Image (tube, rainbow, N blue to C red; front, side, top):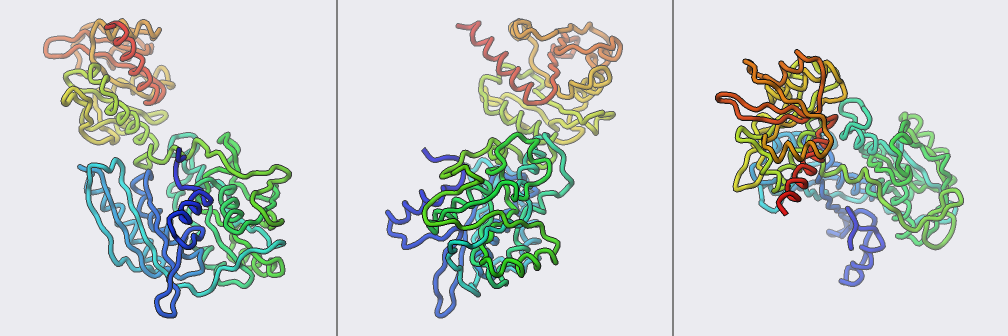
Length: 479
């Protein structure tokens, strides 16, 4: 069974040999047009927040061409979107893509744009074309392993998307080694450049080892890990690290190369050397022939926008839409969910759906967008709750029925019935009056007001888990 993401080099090489491809380089391939050697690389960009998609789509394939000692000249992009995608998605993708192309002098010469039923998330496939100005030289025993830029920056960014850490705004714009590739590719003694992508630093070293049948030895203490990376609790050697670059350099040119990097204020470290013939990587005295990917890789595809609160609500609502049994929990007025900022004060501090999740053909369907201020009444409930218990920043409203209330009681959640009072938002007003927070509020309805249940939780994902448990309890009752 194929694992998540890019195939490893050795597996792909075996397939290429089987089906008559003559050779396979690390990240690009070349051919001759007359006397000129053309280098091409094709890469997908998928599962990224929309705001960043155009940026990374440009850099993935362009970096690969530049790492092959070729000057990137032309690029083609196919932008494929799910049906009913907002036009603003396309505009922000194109804006970022063209900005990067203009910045690095790469001409956009064609592509394809469309929406298709088989596409579930925005996908860009790019092909960059460049002209080689020098040859890649096979590494030799004794050559040094140079790492440029900190290892694990991408991991911190991914962790920030799901709210584990905080990074500066536009941190993701640092996640490209392209400027350093341009600089190093012109220096004597640089034999090989390889960007760190899927599988982290260790996979990049294994790629080089497999391609050239060479054993690599490195020292962990010399690796320039990003500060705070240890807090994520993952294997640092395989931490997602796009933006980091591996260079193989001749030892006699080491001082000249590192002097150039220092003059450009670039973080770097010589971490080891080519040790001998064979396959594998030694990190200190531990030998590696393969890797196990980290859970952070699965953040790709989960976060569609950069704001962590909006992303969290959107992920939760998407899971609700995917679960057909949740249709039984949707009230006539529709379901909504909110997630408040820490110390939220106003409705503008609370992310919610501008429309509702409704029943369509007996399935949940999301209508609207997740925005700040998207839900008025549910936002008032969570703002009232935060005053008395700051833990509970997320809320969802669901259908009120005897079987749902019974399921909630079996889950052991504290339930409070709200008396009928004259109010535009009776649950919020009741919390304010009582000054105490329960996990579940049940309002029996009133003239013109449908009975309702509001559930509070720390995060939207917890609300989805509660809905799963309610749905499971109801199914058990029916069998």
